[in-house]
Image (cartoon, rainbow, N blue to C red; front, side):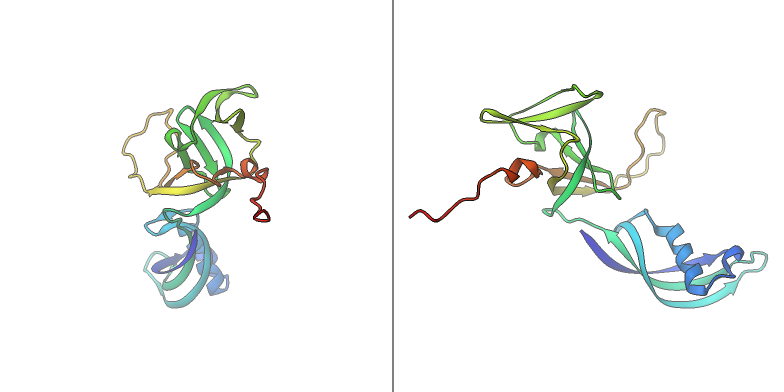
Length: 203
């Protein structure tokens, strides 16, 4: 889910930060450039460390110092087939939206929710729908009471930035993870905690 990547970039340190220790000033500039940004390699969640710094050129009329920096970053880059634990964010007739805390664009579309199921108005939240999975005579609700939900990654996409957006459009998501909970062991962890372990004591 997380991996370490090495990058090289030209970093501009503004005059206001030149009084800081060089590595501190450069790390501050890198965080502003990359932290919480989606790159081709995934979502940057942390600047791990700086390997080398070269330069320190000041362009005429600028006042800022420019450095060539080699550094490592921690990126969130899940792979297809990976099982990840998340929390419930919201749901509607299209499916579920889950959150990892630092990343909230995880979607489980309706066809990837266990069947038979139904979508109904949430009696505790009039602005939201909730999903119910029917298994035999039991019904299992998927809502914000679910402390942990396990999903398997089905797809990771990087939508292009829209040139025009409607006023009521949802915030643009530069990275979207699509998951499924339609398999044994997936879905709210509470579904499976009550399952009795299979005993091989009997011959």
